[in-house]
Length: 516
Image (cartoon, rainbow, N blue to C red; front, side, top):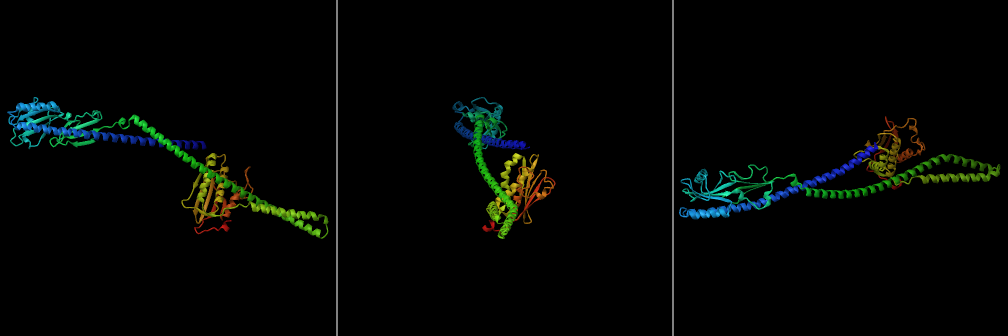
């Protein structure tokens, strides 16, 4: 049972260490994923803003080209068709994103001039839209080419317009960028007309991280971008390995620091326990010697008194002149008897414990001290010690060391009673009730035989081969010194000793003379 408990404690301690490491690694991994996520979003926003500025500038250029061509139309396109066509061709050549330039006569719905052939149905659509225009530029998605749109303007810009000027623009080249960022598979760009027609990109984007309308009053196209994150993106292998190594090293350093502090704290606690044990042992020896000396003095006083009386009678006989030869013998007997009495008296006085004095103490503190002191021995003996303490202080008027010695003796008796048994347990109860403090120590051993109970507190009586028979006697004396009483309680199983003290009042004061 003891080995199983030790194994469980060992595994539990190492599980806590492993769990702490896993938590730290998880937090570090999460921090890395958040950092990578924010890094990608920051890069996306930066690249998207740059692309937005370039696309806006290009859209403004379209307005300038449209204005220049409109000047040629207003100056008389019938006289300057060749100049118009040459200008349009030049624009196509230097600016490939403007895929075509068409000039359509509204009255007959016919293409007048253009840089490339134009289908009749597209001409009809452009004518219809231009006639309905109110003077603003009109945008139209190309009917046959997905990634193209028309920028349409009527000329002259009145209700009596004669022509429709249409610039066909390659939307893909409008947002073209030399940055390698946009060539990534997980990056998506979408460009849409104000009416919602998508020119570039998917019809639906799961998540839009950047969205802004181009800075062009003629082409307020909506530019949107997004980026998808994979596990390898959020947790790059090399960075992940590095962050795990750093977290592990940090955790190891923290463990070493805590371990060193724990060792220091354990050493201090062990020194304190050893000091307490030494104090209790010394007090036990001195008190036991006092009990022994008191017992010896009590037993020897009567024979010594008888010797003294006989010697005095002999002196009287000698004084009567009956046995003068015995005078010297009787004198010596009287002298030695008195010397023996004085020696025993000095032994009794010397053996009395030198007490530090009484004070208001909390028995809960004394219980904790003794429990710590006997914790190692309890583990070795395979005994489980359970403390049942009250929430309020259990204040008594007594000597701290003496009360710890009483508790120590009672719990040690329990250890000895449980020796060789299985599932050993000692329960220590401390209660405060009816102006009394009740301490009770119980074990689940075989109990005390009925015929021995009357002699439990008799000095030098013991059932153990190596026992002194003074433990309970000494405990009784110390308890009574604190105005308490100790007695054995019959129970169904094991042995139970109960100690009752009067509850100390807050007004209790102890003088030095009274304490001594």
